[in-house]
Image (cartoon, rainbow, N blue to C red; front, side, top):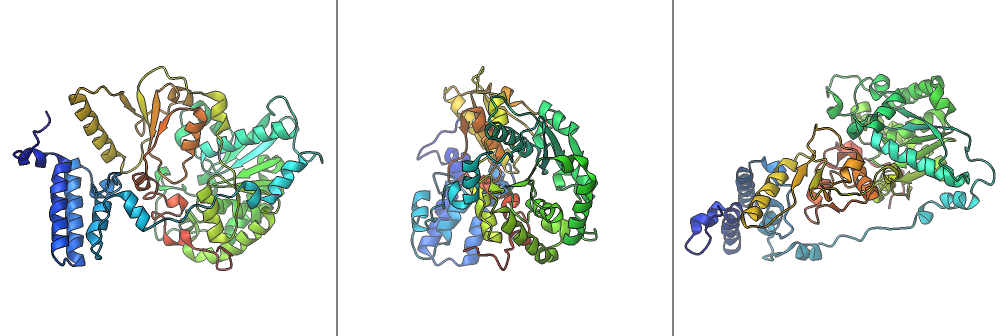
Length: 468
């Protein structure tokens, strides 16, 4: 039963979690405005606020701190901004804060501007009969992320059909290298990918790529050298018949692998899709001291691959990151997830709403708050759609099954998430957080996109790069 609120019902007001935090906030703000509060005291105020909120919602403070309020003045980040301003000013809303500290507008060029070589290829078509239009066309998909490989495979098929002037889809013979299934495990696509996996990440590199796959970090472990990795890739490439006979080689993640593969075997059949940060997971595999040995390979990669239009970025942020780090500006060619558009569609059979793949550390506290709000609405007689949680570790749903829900709710875990392109291709109504709440989900765990959870070395820049 909701607590009674009113001038004579302070106990009821304080029993409301937000009410308790608001009273705390007013007390802290009054101290700031009426007295000269030093920085350490303000820090104590902020930490006290966070600890209180964490106790109320039953979640660690580092989780709740990612739940910034769109209404401003509710959680730690926006409260601390006003508490820490020493000029006597006050921001009553997020919009006011953004107005005072404007973010430069994004750079949004057309792909022809960044990759004139691609425009020339498009205009030329296959007049010189250089397109691999045989049946079937061997294709090598090189990258650790299985869902991304599927996107590349469907895009290659569509491109070949158009380039070869075929009225039907061109058949391809796909081979996967260094690939993890991730969310595809237990699905038909995952089983098919597993049957064409020619070499796993562990078999070649000697250990898993990520902690989630079983990687163990130890300061005493032996690391690769850049030269040793290139030599090993060259030897493996010549021995692997599936890679040798592939007419098209598509490489993506991690990007340093694509650069080293180019150094090992050349790039005459290689197409590279930029997604993650160039140096993501590099320090673990090679050590930060090997970065300087890596830059010459990057420069050679850029000088030879860009002119032939063989490098593109799946997201605008990916293109800008590579440009800043290495002076290489790939064309932005977004992921299309054509394989999903061809095999599934939005066909709701229920009014339920699906919470789509919630695996973020801060997801439990967000879900707890969502359940509290839903319970309050229900107590007020408001009928809401039933919320179905797609829990971690549960059976993976096919996109046809996902398309049967009335709508999807998604918390993007990084600034560029392929799953967002997937649900766009599905055509399902999708709800995502608005600003500023969105930032609290896409940045805290954005190590793969040069974010704070990666070591400083992942953000190193080539000292010779023209990245202005």
